[in-house]
Length: 150
Image (cartoon, rainbow, N blue to C red; front, side, top):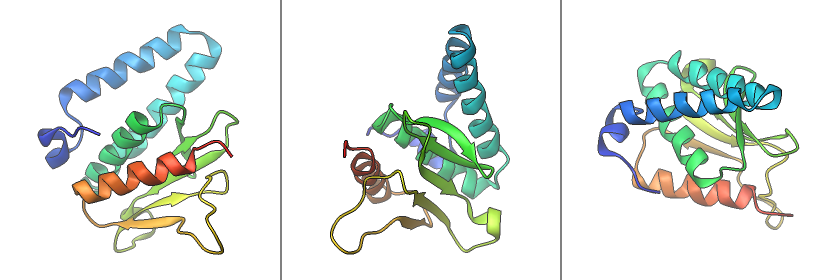
């Protein structure tokens, strides 16, 4: 859960961008299935790049945190939003930026495939007005819980 100060302040670092491009090339080299994953990753990165600056910075940090925390989730777009799916291809979590529906804040939203069920009520959406260590820790905890074996 280490953070990069430059990344936290302004999105992905040059090293992070280079690593993602390298990973996409590796996936394409794996063949048809790898090419699909690479295309899905690129679609997520393109969706993030098209966001307004503040939303983009949040989305970049969410993306890096989810990829680092739960490598079993695969990035893809879902209704044009960055999303992360399980091995069955079911979307577990999405990032909805504020500009998408002209809302006050971005949200991290869990879908039906998430394993968050706890009692009679549980949260499935969090507002993210700014990136902080507390936000990062909450996302790590929630994504880890959402992907635990049922």
